[in-house]
Length: 217
Image 1 (tube, helix red, strand yellow):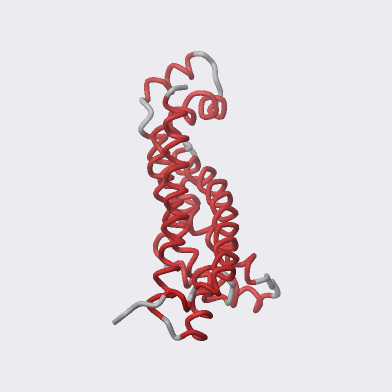
Image 2: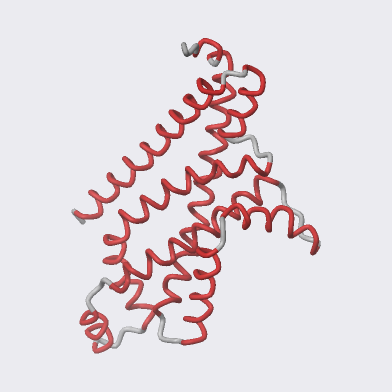
């Protein structure tokens, strides 16, 4: 079989537009996931059992159910109780909530990796739990978390392809649209895969750069 990518070239602007939507959705979802994950991750280690349980339950439910089902619940399920969201908004929120469950475990692991002696020293110095977390624990924990967070962000970019199930015109949806017109399935999805590869490589490079900068601080 001979591949003919000239069929795909006229549709490159569509691919770039879809990639832009993928990047926008991924960035917004990463921010939501970081915010939720940090709060829940701290909640997993805070010495208050009710908060521990709520944080554990969130992680348990999010990590134990498929992302696709979560997206469907938000986009198709919420309207049944009077909450209607645009597809893009629902998709971003769904990705962010899902990512938050995984980021929470990364944050918990990073915090628990900090020597407990430092917590005891901070207590002796009269620092509150919040002050200890903010000034002593989290800055060190972030160094431990960066590689795992980078992997999570890359995974989120790839999982954003599920937004196509909500009829969001992101990269995968564009690929499906072009394939339906050109019937060049292999060529189309090779291009889609290469664009995803470029995006994930950029994310990986950025995370490594931040990690190097953080290590020398």
